[in-house]
Image (tube, rainbow, N blue to C red; front, side):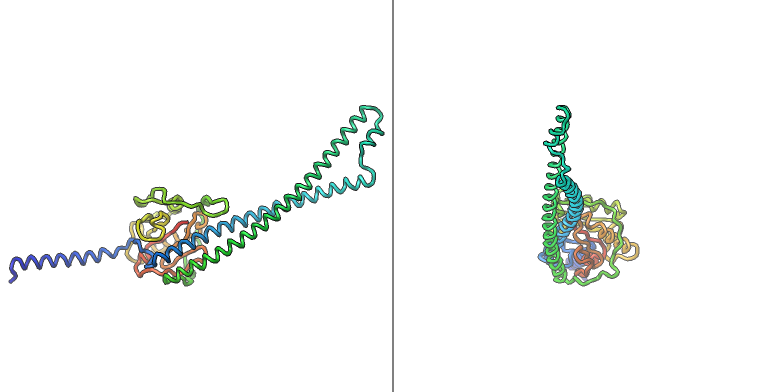
Length: 339
């Protein structure tokens, strides 16, 4: 039979064991944590984030340059047409002068019957000379514009070639980072696609890149902060019907959450579930990921992670190296990172 002190000791040990057991169970948290990127080290995450951001900016500059080139081409076509008209008109004037049909000041004076006629004819000749001079100046200016436009086209092409090199370099860097983290294989077959564009384009710099942003606004999902583009993305997702539980800002760890540039959209309506999404929840996640892809350029989305896949604009859907948990493998939520 146990004595009172031994019974007390046994009771304390039992309580401690229960606390430990429940504590371990509670630690299996379905909520994405600071290391939700599946054990990737900070250097790999930073390389991925930096490469993808630089790729997006280079792509923006390329798109802007291509649009500028097209606009310059249209201007050149109009200038070339106008130059042809001016040259034809000038040729007709020169031909008339060669044949002796051109009105001269001497002919006006000698052919005038009275002073009034002479004065009128002199004014007419002066007007014709002014028109000819104006036409010649317009020819010269049009030729100058065409030469400048040719230089602008050459500069646009050189810029496009430079941006393509930057894009290719950053594509390779991002893919290398994914492989180091245990992912990077092509998994485009069966991946979410077909989302509808429901958004307008966010502001860009004059060269087509995205303006730099900080964690300057309130996060509607936590007590933290958000960048303006992240808030816009969150609001646009809500407008598009993606209203399940969402958490954005998170302090600590690497990645974009502490910068206010990422959101985790739960597949479940009310919370993060510690299991793979199935059924309607899986469909919800697929639809959200597809919508994010379709609106990525307009919103400034850097990458999307869902169901052990990661989508980047440089290479599409690739496998994602998680940590074996529903949260770490992103089976229970869609992660969207912003530029």
